[in-house]
Image (tube, rainbow, N blue to C red; front, side):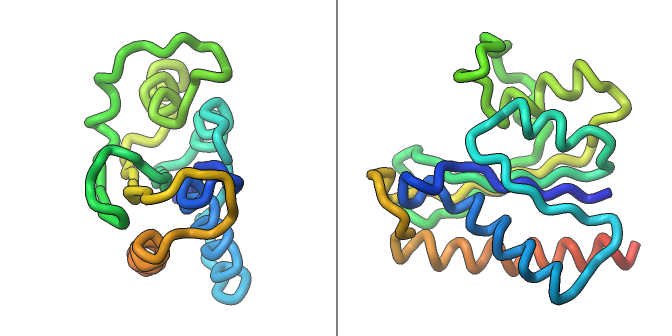
Length: 157
């Protein structure tokens, strides 16, 4: 099973890009169903990511980042780079998807995906609101097309 999870806060402009991409992929899969692929929206709940990823062979997480890079920059981060993160506090308010990937592998072991990829899109605007900035909209289209290609390749294998 390929699991794609969109994360973010829809009420904070560009921070909602992961959820918006997940919603668009869900609509795409309604028109073009693909077996063994699930697309989920997990908002800001890291624990949700950990439990939804369990039992999948591949996991892709999509979220916004705010690192000072140019708005709309796309980062593809292999999951292995996230395993070395410091232990989270396990307080549900502090437990993010990156913690979920690191801890999920420890808790679920072989029942957690080995193949993990994270797409991060650099945000321009994290103010309250629903609109994506122009740069993030363009990047979202690019990531959406990459995910459609991943889904197609997954179903061929």
